[in-house]
Image (spheres, rainbow, N blue to C red):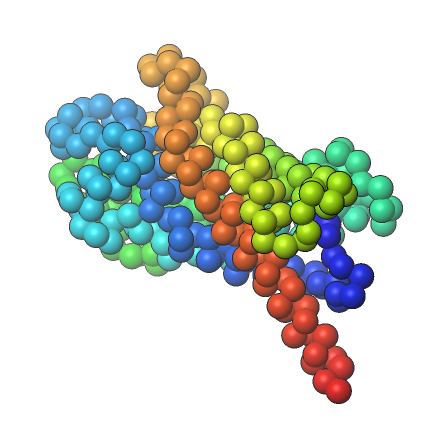
Length: 309
């Protein structure tokens, strides 16, 4: 990212890597109920018979969370949190922590970074992250959506049970279900999120609108969250539906997309848009603000270790 002051020690790749994962976990802890609400709204209508039998309908972000707490207990909005934190430590560390390094790779060390280089860096780290974190994403989505079983029982008893059950019943490929739509989604999300944040922050600092501190980080993160939601929402809905589907329900991600379009119409691709925006906007703000502060704190700590006197 831009904005390192001359007197500050530039954070190393290791600092960025672990700082990004830690900041993403902090953001997940704060915003996870919104993400669960988003998943429930996205899959609503996928199994109409089950929905009618259970008599549960979700209306709006906070209405969804309230319904979940009332019908499933106060811990339900945090279903899948363990897998979510596992995902962020392996996922965000790569896609966010290695973004600057990949950007330098594509520009070959040049200070003039083009939009194409930024986009290529975002796509690359987004795709790389999926290769590491896809099983954790599948388990997270399954946990968030598992209330949908008709007899009221849950698919999985715990995080490790979910990994074992999916591998046993669906094969190792089951843990990588939805990998291609997820790569597509994360290439889009990474470009929209990181590139937008990078550009907004760079422009703010270039024109001296703000200093490189919390208000600047907040503004850039909010803009990044909104742009990401608009661009990535359709792919996100398809990814959620496909990853949560029963074996054989959809032949592939394209079939899932066509089925949604024919049975529910184009508006289905923006189901859960409001919780997606609330979640991505708040997640981006918490994550980027935490990330910037962690980078500075860790860089200062490293500097003090290297020169204690």
